[in-house]
Image (spheres, protein in one colour):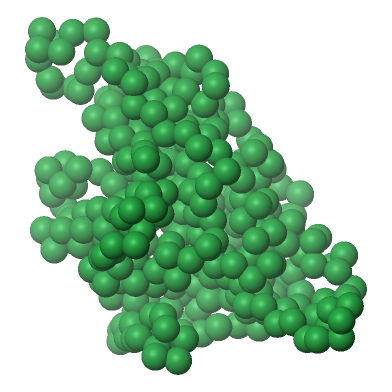
Length: 359
Ligand code: ADP
Ligand code: MG
């Protein structure tokens, strides 16, 4: 069957990135279940491992997205072709936008957003081709605002983690002991995290320091046991505040925002439980990913959009609500593995990505 999603110029862009088979998978001769016929399409062949072949022989599914990144795509390709540049430009114009990576553990979410963790051991070399989307977005952002001498910009950044519905400040590791409260602000009409460090970033280096510090704390924190990173969501937010005087002499002030979100692994509950996740962890992850998917699909549906959207049902969607409900753009990067043994998870991710956009 054909499971499509395509309307290019709206407020949700869905792209898929397929990671290469790793060395172990190549040694073990795992074939690829995916084919790329072009035109934003992905073909998924084969069956779930363990499923009786006779039940569902020669299963072939076709999915369509805005963009498909094949395993050879570089980190620079993701910056150039994912639509993130439009998100950065809209953030500068005062909109709240979100880019997030969805996928099972090991599918390349963190690689796509930040690159390999050892990039952050010591001082990163800006020319390193392994740098991820966040680093590259910062460079692009500064390139754009440096060219606007007529506008005064102030940048601020925060970096948090949501683990079991508790918010931890990645710029303030002490908060792991006493999680921060998520509150509703009557004044701004939105949710916010109380006492979250929000750092003024005058230079590119200040923004990079936020990324580096958060990555270090995520990796070494006392809470980072047991492959913790696959069970938590992280949100790095850049606020872009600006003031300018228009030709007519009036002052114009804007507050834009870009969230970069690395989601918890989306693997199915049955599997995650057998790998040692607690029921509470699995339930919290499943619920927040489900609510997020629902919120996003209502973005592209004008009827649903005016109805009730359950943002309040998870911390993740509370904190992303203003960008999901507003006029900003959301970019979903669905990360998948091409290996046969990941077939069920790859199907799950491709479907989630399709639903996010189906009208
Ligand atoms: P996730 O964050 O989804 O759990 P990771 O980003 O940690 O997955 O990726 C798992 C492994 O695969 C890492 O060793 C990572 O470096 C590697 N990897 C992921 N995507 C790619 C890619 N596009 N190219 C090369 N290596 C990749
Ligand atoms: Mg990861």
